[in-house]
Structure formats: structure tokens, C-alpha cells
Length: 253
Length: 286
Image (cartoon, rainbow over all chains, first blue to last red; front, side, top):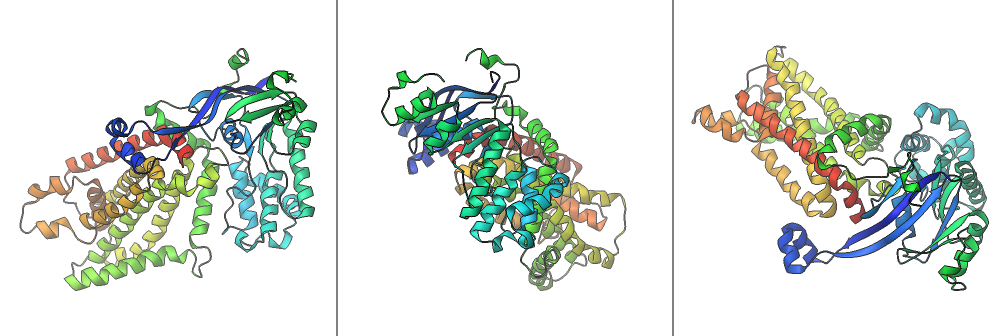
């Protein structure tokens, strides 16, 4: 539990904001444009983020809309490069942010599963070996060799979640995906994600289901305007979110 | 926590590499992710003609139809040099490869943005898989040249080697231009819109529908116009390819060939450096 897997060290991320024609002139003319119109306007999405995710830990992330939760997850997954500070990691974290990512409408269900497997680093032979199990799980059976564009939205969601069934990452980053598809399949997909969480053992999860997070997590981070407002004991941090406690009253675990 | 930063297994995620390490990073990642690249190539090729009745036949039919249109318009109308259909078809195919390879690389980030913002893997994979797909399409399209080669009495000699050399040069230049423009185009669409006209201009300025030697040859000695017109590397590669198919010596000096390859290689290496330096920042801005 004490081995650090991901360390966020003074992480900050700023976006350049569009300023209409001024932005274009600045980009085209470089220093001259900046002298006339001033520097690019910047929006700070994250700043002064410091925490460590340890092996075997379950870390929750909460915050209001626009507080920087998804941006933080993108930085932790290596998709965004921080503009300040660094993210250090000893593993390849996998971000689960929506299902069906990378699937192509023109390809069949089977072809999409092979393609998705390749993105996760699973060889075609292994995917083919797992295929009967995956087809059963997806309940697509006779439709698996039809192009995905002919699927209903429920079928697409089932195919999307099936791609994940074969993947067992060391560190799982989950950004608010706890249930897709029709009610019956929703239960199945939630079970799958819970299985993945159990297998991964080290998880960082963004969710608005506070009760679930209090039950599952060892610690929770509360983000406010891109900064960590509180980090520590799940119940205490949720209390800070609802202004029932001060950040200084949060116990570390 | 400060002590934990020094844990021996910890490495910086998505770290910024020195500017000149771009080419080596791209080559290493291409080798490391070759299986994924293969799957993307399959996807691109399957997507290209899926849903059409003729499928992969379009890889042959499309260039035939395009070449026929130009042939009817240009060659028959202007009067014919015996080998012109072969030259015309060859030029159009190779130019199409140059345009599609560079355009595909230029658009590679914006076209795959949905995936890029959900999963991490090196972004150059999209451009590399596009290049391989375009190269396979070029090879398939070149089947249309075979009957023409037979018709005009194709024979293998030392000049035949110029044809693959022309393809190689076009590949280097096309990919280099694509890498160079990818990041600027992802932020400002103007780059791609402007490039449309550059591609059109290059098509007419390069020896595709015509030959420099037909136009200038009878009136002006080769040494006067050759260094200037063949300063365009694409013109050199197209000529190498067409004279290679023909098995005859090209009117391009060795010096111009060296300069074309040197220029294209510099564009490619610089493009790789620029792409790797700025791609991470660009992803956040789009």
C-alpha cells in the first residue's frame, strides 16, 4: 500500500483563451502581436495539485462542474501534459472515460473488438481466443459480424463495454462511467466495472455518487476551481463539499 | 511526499523531449506500436470503400477514371506523344500519393481527436498508419500501369531503378510536409484551407499533365531552365518515376536529384521535430 504509483507534483494546467482576431494576429506575428495586444489570455484549469496515489489505494475525486476533475484525470492518464509541474508514474494508467472510444461505425462488431484490443495492447490471437466469451457477454450473437452502424444505441453500448471486459489494467482511472445500456445490461456493465476495480486494486475515480465513493474509497480529493480544497477521509471531505466542515478538519485517512 | 518523488520506478508521464529527439522518438514508437499501426491500417483500408458495391475495385477504377478524364482533355486534345498515357497516368498516381499522404498527416490529430482525448498512445501512430494505407492504395492503383507498360514495350534496365527512387522521394517529401503542418493546422484551420490551393498549384506547376522538356526544350537549352524548374523536389521525383517507367535517362541533373533528396529529408526531419515538440500542447488547445 505504501508504494507510490502516481505522484502529482505541483501540477498546473492552463489553456490559452481565444480572443477573436487578436489571437490570430498574435499567433501570426509572434512578439510584435504580443507587444500590441498583450500576451495570450490564459485560463488556469488546474494549479498546485500535489498528491500521491499508492498501490492498492482507491482514491475518489469530487467537485462541482468545471472544477477540473476531468482535466485532472486526463493529466493523470498522460493524455494532457501539465503546463506546470509533473506527473510521475511507475505504470501505464488506463483511463476509462466513456465506452466505445475508437470504435468505427463501418467495421463489424468483431472487427471493432479486435481494433480496440490492439489499442489496449492485446494481440489479435488473444482477442480471437476470448471472442466467444465476449460475444456472449455483449449478447450480440448473430449481429457480431454486422457493421456497427446498423446497431441500436443499446447494442453499441453493449459492444463498447464488452471491449473492456478483456482488459485488466494495473491502475484504473474512471471518469464517471458507471452504467450504460438498457437496465438489464446496466447491471451487468456495473458489475464488470466493479470487477475491473477489484482486479486493478489501484483506482482513481471521479463520480457524483458520494455514497458509493464513501463506501469504496480510502481517500477523496475535493477540487475547487482547479485546486485541491481538501484531501483525506472520505466522509470528512464530503462534509467539506456540503460546507458542514472546514478543510482543516479533514483527517488524512 | 517529497521522498516518494524519488522512488526509483517513477518516471515522468508524457514528458517533453528535446527538440531534436523527435525523429528518434517517432521511429522508436513506430517499432513499439507496430501491431496497433497494423490494425489502424486495416481499419482505414476497410473503411475506405466499405458500403460501395465495387469495394477494392475502386482502388483501380478511381485512378483509371481520373486519368481518362485528363487523358481525353489534355493528350487527345493537344495531340499525342506516344508514351504520354503512361506518363500521365504515372504522374497522376504519384502526385495523388503525395497529396493524400501529406494531407492525411496534416489532418491526423483533428481527425482522431475523439480517440486522442480518451486514450493515450503516441499520436504519430495516426500519421504513420495513414502513410502506410496511402502507400498500399498507391501500389494497388499502380496495377493500372501494367497494361500500358506492356503496350509501350517495357524493358528492365538501369534506369528502371529511378521509378522506386521517385516513389521514395515523394514519400519523404509528402510525409515531411504533413508533419510540418500538422500542429499549425490543428490550431488554425487556415493552414489546411490554404494548402488546398498550394496542392492545386503544385499539380499544374509540376510535370504531370506536361513535361518541361516539351515546353522549353525546343526553344531554350536544358542547362538554362533545368536548375530552376527542378528546384521543386516534387518535379524531380515525378520525373524520376516517369523516366524510370520509360527506362530512359531523365533530363534531371544528378545535382538536382541530390538537392531534391536533401531538401526533402530536411523537411521530413524538421517536420518530425516540430510535431513531437508541439503535439502535446496542441491537443490541449483543440
